[in-house]
Image (cartoon, rainbow, N blue to C red; front, side, top):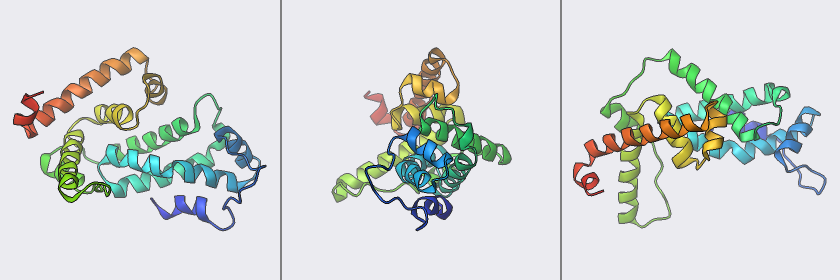
Length: 211
């Protein structure tokens, strides 16, 4: 994560001191922030920075880009907090901001979808430290292959797969984030899964043919 986003949570002037009176619900924390309590926004940053960062790593394939996007998303969320209406969860609203930033970034860059680039970016994925050496290697190889396949998909397909398969969002939540009807979410997700399967079949023809 970027230092600016972390500073919102860890700056001595904004660090939360636990007390029974301090709000813990997201909506309460938003109201407290708007009332001038910067400690409250620091709690929101601490609560969601890792989740947002990990999701953006999956979406962009780059830890550096994900860190920058997450940092900018929190800064924009703070600036625009008075526009948060509470009709959606705070994280859903925050994620929308991050997606808009991602779209803007993507428009500024030439789209790249090659196996070599996908391999390079997928190599940035962290290893699971809880597994044994052999199992860890297998898991890392599989995770990298899935990430490579994801990066070869279009942005829309990759986004909906990340939300459903890695964020475990419900269809309603995905529709809320992407401003899509649930029926459209289901159809796009089906097509995205089929495209991912095709990419994985090209990478692992023997293993995928057994499924």
